[in-house]
Image (tube, rainbow, N blue to C red; front, side, top):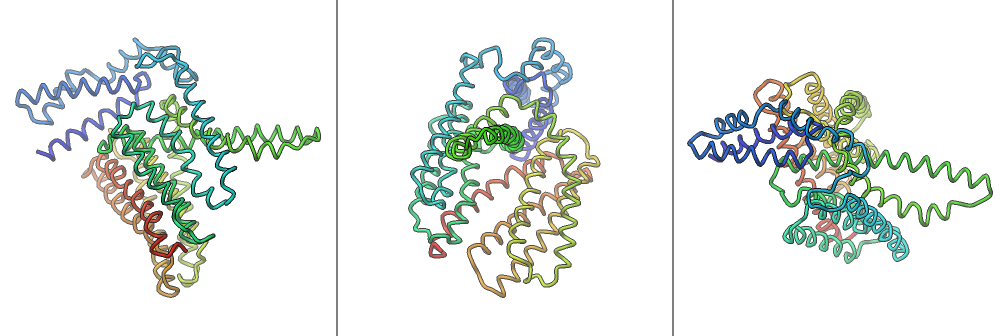
Length: 450
């Protein structure tokens, strides 16, 4: 019975993903349609139909999806234009004025800037600032998600407790100045904070594969928007700086002391709002980006694999090179996740899915070489916090990529559904957060805070 219900949820997820790609249907309307579909399924189940029969009959009664899209397009034809505007003309579902969300976002963006600016003033130590930087920005981003999702008290408490615990650990632990465990804490704390932001984004619905995949898609789109904002800001600042320098005005102190502390964190909140406001616009770009960068990434991985295998003894591979390769593998994983989130789950397997399998296999080969090099270095030079943290990350990547390759191959052969591949990605992501928490909380005392 549990398996039948799991299959039903997978079918509903695929149906929802298909409907979400209809630009004339807003996310709120998709939720309404899903509620109607679930009601129809429940009515059919009450008559004695099994899950599959109830789903098929409910879909039939709901009507053709293309017809539904055309109907929504006729009733709400202006949506296709309004999604390109900054502020909609109508109030939101709660009846709030149309400018309220924009005003809230601007207030939160300025608040994040003030928090970072205050941190720069209070914390003279650069390492302490690095440990706390994410703590300054996270509350404002989570506050936006909380307002948007109308979080319950229980969900808010779920966010506050780990956030407070992380803040205590980062500021109470007696880290050795310039030590490895402090650097590891600085690098891994943002991972924990981002997954906490994911809890706020999904509205506390942690068991929903669809909501978790929405967060994966949101993360990719946020990276796109933030990069665009950063590039546009850099051009504007560069032109202003050059102009003022020609006039004999030193603009750099203002840039370093005021503009950057406000612009960098504030742009993150604004980018999150833009993603929420214009999901359909970026979703049109996502498939193009993934299809361009997937083959290029495969070529890069194969070239790196050739260099690694011909570099001589694995123990002689430079530590900085191993760190860089870890960063590349994480980037490959992000590209894989974003590609999966941007794909139509109902589409048949094609050439691009085969390229995804090649990408995963190439990443697996690189990861295997790196694991061998790390184990060789540990056997020759002994343990250290950095080596164990890197080894743990690579083992997690190995498990993730092996299972992803297996499911992708099964999908290409028609033995697995695409939903199974999606669910594996979203259900494995919390493992990375758990490992990051271990590195931040457990590693420092185990390695004497060195």
